[in-house]
Length: 108
Image (cartoon, rainbow, N blue to C red):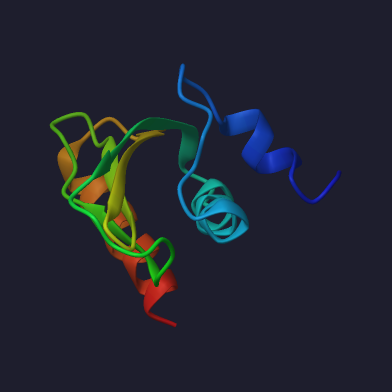
């Protein structure tokens, strides 16, 4: 298995650009390695104002919906991107567990 195969097989949707370049893809790869994550769908990139490009890249996993699917918010400087995370669980409580596990991985 190649290093990017897990992320490439789980990445979907019509937006293929990930903010933060290699660092953004590395964060999504960490998410894709979770056993309960089935699909990662990046959304449009929003810019909140004018600033020098670059800056710190960060990710936060947000609350699950009623079916246990999650959203992640990637931020890089003044840009942000929402990423949908489709999980294999079917309940909000299970989604909460996955959210806590993923956020704990990014705190390290």
